[in-house]
Length: 347
Image (cartoon, rainbow, N blue to C red; front, top):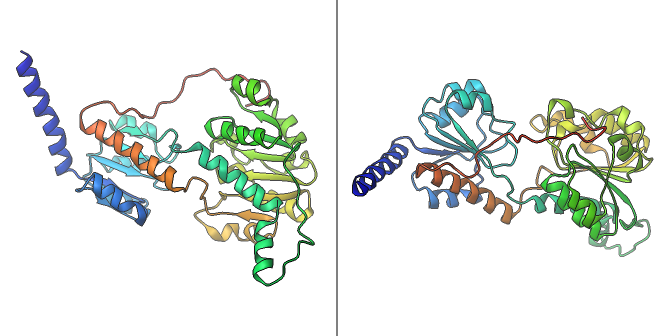
């Protein structure tokens, strides 16, 4: 009996691997620097460096049993319905709002993500944006390169004793709080769910949204883009902020009303907007006025983009694929958490 079970298991695994050979593994939105990592791990994988959309995405993934994409590859119901061979969809990202989970469930597609490829990397970028701006690093560098070694006009401000408001205390928000604590900052936080260890160890003061907005010198966003968070930073919210407030967004561009931010910067109500994400990232023209504003500092969605985090991103994805091909349940299957979140004043 034991021998028979072993033979059956061997044949089953062989069928899974054989099936994958007949139905290639497809990776889309792969940077040139990462293509060799993919081909080393999966020599028969089909690799696409671009970001296909719609019918192009269908064409790229046609016949594949396993597909790995990124945040810009939108697997809508229409796309998924045209991929009958698809069994595993592995996104190399924490977020998965670019994937229609309901359509995946209906079509029997397992969805995996990368729960934490490097939350500290994004938190570090928050402070890279903040420190380089308030201490005038780019201007100082440009001045010295021009032959002018003079500090006048480059007076900065410190972080010590400033109040930072963290909207969203998931993995990234907690790392931001740790760094802020190290700088001696006062920390306000808003989240539907409290993290008690942050209160005990870092002195984080959980409060209501209105209080955080009104009393923070610096506000940083770390929440997903949802219907209820769309344009949460709008004219009404900005009006109640401190004069000279600094806003940081490394989360999702849709959280802010771009026109309202531009108006606040031009009026001086907002000192700086430090943005790694934009509301219209796929339509650059719609962002041009905000980008051109001198006190809007923008980077092209690079907060996550470090060597270590990219390696982790691919390694976790590779592991999910390996587990699936062996007939195991992948460790990082996307599941909607069932938790009770009832913080007062937070929708």
